[in-house]
Length: 253
Image (tube, rainbow, N blue to C red; front, side, top):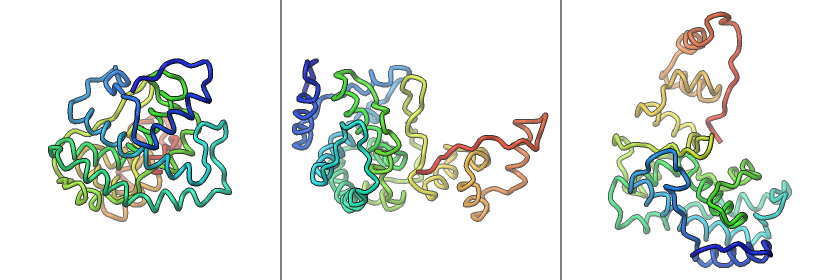
């Protein structure tokens, strides 16, 4: 489906929302979205599979609860039922993806698994939102944090791996999607995912611990890192004043 420019954007957004609720989605050129890097066929198929599965389900829940994703202030603290409704649909979403992945090879299923653990459902929704709102291929950054809270998949990595028939310890590549000056798919849905990705060598556990205090505490408890290792790295990166505290970055939702 192609989106044309329209002098009445609200009417076009309403129409595209109706289409999407019925799984009639505009095509996304994922390679053009991330033109700074070369995506593999498996990564493109994985992004598209998540996209085709997540958008209709999310919009159906949003419609049921009168949550307008196009409104300037779409997040309403009083609407706590929205979190509950989306959480209840997570198992359904995993089942839909599992069925959609039946005919996909292991590499593609592994990409789906990896992306979902790191915000893949959020990413594809924001790409759809950017395209529908502007008519241009983009990632909509308005209220990104609020929609992130709503659309993150909380399923643990081992449970999701079983559903998608994935070997979670395989050495497949993990995509970090580059768009403009930002990197996406760089956060974790839970501490278990952070631990697994460190054990797989995707992240250095000491560096990750230095950046995120919650991760550091968890890794220390698991015996993956020590306080001394974290302090040593902090000093190595700031040798003039080891007492300085580096700014922390949240790697967990």
